[in-house]
Image (cartoon, rainbow, N blue to C red; front, side):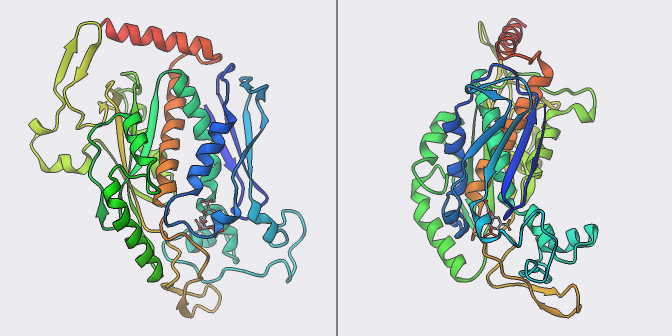
Length: 388
Ligand code: EPS
């Protein structure tokens, strides 16, 4: 399975193509649109989301709501393009009129400066238009198709927020995806503890007043993933490594860990290793899940638990120092419209990229031309594991 996205933040549309989705998967388009709507929300978002109304359109690989096994192509239109139609016109040659809003004062922490140096863009808009997290809308559409595939195999996921700036939210009482989902959908921060909501709102409001921005921590849980995905035999077959790479590929993510993560480095081994249990009929399991569902680079049948640290948004209303790329004079960075925090959408994006990697891994591990055969193979494999 392979996917690619294209499109600029203020260009006409975002496009995604995914190859390798089995034939015979019914796609609930309303579910894709519902997750696209959630990604647009969350406390701390800026004004761009008042303009957008993200909806997916399938333009290849789907017939009468069921996948054909051919590349699945989808688009999400950028409504804001109407305000940028000349500046972002894909075809007409550049003129002084259609190249206004040039960006020549790179924002620290964004791709602006290095992207310009690498690709020789003297107008850094050519960088920021693609490096913008707007692209994650189409990744989420692809991710939700993968989540629908995984749901057919009984695999469920959730991504939620565990910290916003200085405010941590206690870990959930249970790792059950349904319980966490029920708790986080009661507020606009995707946190499990409703008592923390007011304090986090206040922190975001104050940060906005200060012209500053916030990051946070995200956790994704995937349950009912069969043991043995990935391998210990070589570094590049370790599935946790591939997942970590995909999560790092989400805009503004600066750290990834599994289970108790960095805390494991500070305690003795006896409080880290998950002791082994066996129940007749159920097979092997673990008495705890400190390692986040991975041993030796392979899933071990426990829920996968991935943590991601997101840095604050680099576009600040109180801009930081930079240098004009033409005059080389020090000055303040460009101020672009921005979110105060994007931790809520990021938690949805991280959940969705994990879904993509899980669907990829499963379709490369099992025969997956057709959904019925894939389901049979996965079921047979699960029975085989239980009989070990
Ligand atoms: C972003 C800047 C803002 C965000 C954008 C990511 O866009 P704009 O410059 O149009 O105000 O709203 O995120 C999205 C558009 C989105 O859909 O998530 C950036 O610079 O990364």
